Structure formats: C-alpha cells, structure tokens
Image (cartoon, rainbow, N blue to C red; front, side, top):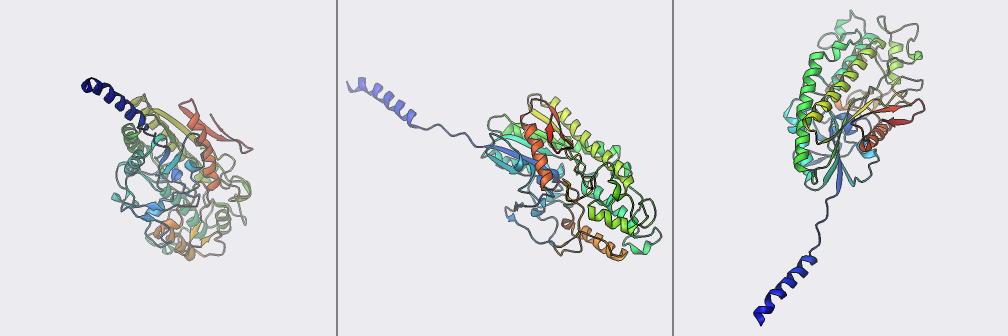
Length: 411
C-alpha cells in the first residue's frame, strides 16, 4: 500500500515545491552612452569620478595632472543621456570619454598616443550587460580619429586668428617652433575628402563591433541604437558688432582690439574660417549618416536610428546674437595662463609674448582648454530633448531643430 501511495505523494510534494520557487526577477533596464566629448558631457560641468583601467575611481586630480587621467573623460551629470526624458529606463550609464576615438571602442584608450587611462568602451558595456537589460544606446563617434580630431581643428583655426590679431607676419621670433600660420582656415586645412573617408571606415568598424556586442549581451535582444552626429558651436557668420573694432577688420595685419572683443564673446576666429568650419561639421554629419545606412543594411533586424542635430543650436550659437557667450548653447574658448585654475575671460591689454605664453599653456595642459566650443549645460539639455525624441520615433532618421523661439522639434 505504501508503494501505491508513494508516487502520488512525491508528485504532490514536487508540485508544491515548484510553486514555492519565486520567478526570477527581470534585470533593470538601462540606457548607455558611448563615444566622445559631445556625448560624455564635455563643457557641461559637474564632472563625475571615472574608473580607470586599474579599477580606481579618479576624481579631479588638479589642473597640472597628466591629461591622460581618466577624470578628464569629463563625464558630466549634465550630459544629454542623463537629461533626456526616457520613460521605462531605470538606470543610465555614461561610458563615453572626451577625446574618444573609434580605437577606444574595442581597445583600452591608453594603448594609443594621447589616450586616457580607461578600459575599452566595449568592456565597460559588457559590465553593464551583466546586470542590466540594455534598451537604449546613444553613440556619438567620428569627430576624433586617426586622421583628425575636433580639438586639433578648433585649436588650429583659433590659433591662426589670435596670431593674426596680435603678431605681425614678419615677427617670426615671437614663436616657439616657428611661426603660426595667420591665414583663415580653408576646408582642406580641417579635413580632406581622403581623411573623411578613412575616418568613416574607422567609425564603421567600431560601431559594427558595438552592434555585435549588444546582440551577444543584451538580456532580451531588444534595444534601440541612436547614432547622433554633431552641431557646430559657431554660426555661418558673426553678428555685425563683431565685424570691426577700432577701424580694423580681420582681413588686415594686427587687430588686437577686435581680437580681444571676439575672445570675450567666445569666438576668436576669422569670419572667413566659418564656412570651412560648417563644411567640416556637415562632413561629420554625412560620415555618421553613411555609417548608419551601411549598418542598417548589415543588421536589418536591429533598431537603428540616425539623429541629426546639426540645427539643434540654431539662433543660439556663439556670437550669433549680441550678448554672447551668455545667450549661447556652447562654451566659449577660455584659456588658462598655466595650471592656475583661473580662466581668462578677457585678453585685452596682453602683448604678443603673453598671448604666446597663454596659448602654449593650452598645449602643455590641454585639460585647461578642452571644454572650449563644446555644448554647455543648457546645450546638453537641448541634446537631451533631441535624444528623447529619437528614443520614441517610428522613423529611421530624424532631425532635431531649434526654432527662433527656442522650441525644439524632432522629426
């Protein structure tokens, strides 16, 4: 009789035991940012400690520290990923790094020249995937690569203007390492067609690895990837009060008062350089758009969105209206005379030797000027609105535009 009862009793106990085991909770959802300074939050302040390749969280190390310090990735609490309205997202991870290049996606950044001491962004992404269900990924990549970097482009054009404003073309002795060119920047000075093509190939390979990794690690296999391009911090022309000062425009030799006026406003640059700058930023937009199109064809089942932000700062760029930089969505160029912690907001009264010394400080301690010409906290807030629209759109490609009234539309 006991044998006859044993099977039903065991089955009953098994059923009770099975119903007593709670279902495994789903992991929390996450949004992740990958890429360079326009994603990390450069220019927005409130920079948070960054874990380096040794697992140590690096807080601000002082202005005279090596620029390779992980902190100078400048991951801001005001970055667009952290400002965007993203319903359904429980946690957010900013893994981007100012100065980041395609190289840094699969390889530790400090393995290249001028890289920062942080692990590869894919290794950081895999760590998030072990604890979270990744639902949204924001990628900003392409402005820095083995061919050119945004920082170098900005420094080149600003230095030409400052040299032209303060130093005569004949004063070769005023420069360390030879004279600085004083002509406005032309398109080929910033990036040639061949360089943009090479940068596109690098970026395509890096983003392809991101998509492959996401398909391997995402808990439910469902995630939206937003490819954001770049917005130019400068207008197509400066507002008219900045065209001339003391009877001198920027098409003659030496114009210190005008140079100081434009520096105060945040835009020390020749008017003739602006068109080249917009060709450059437009070229970056084309680069990102083409990478998006190529990968849509390679990964037809993935949810890939191109977010065009080239008009997101319309009407609020540096020196576009009177009152700059206070009414702009981008940071002005601000130099520091050595690692003092004090930024110079006015160059009026400085002679050419002092200007040379100050400019050299930016080269020696790049962290003292790396925020220049990046979105400020308000600008990253606008980019957050752009991202919020891209996160819910049914389209594969959207443009984020700022109207004259300041309204942001995504469509």
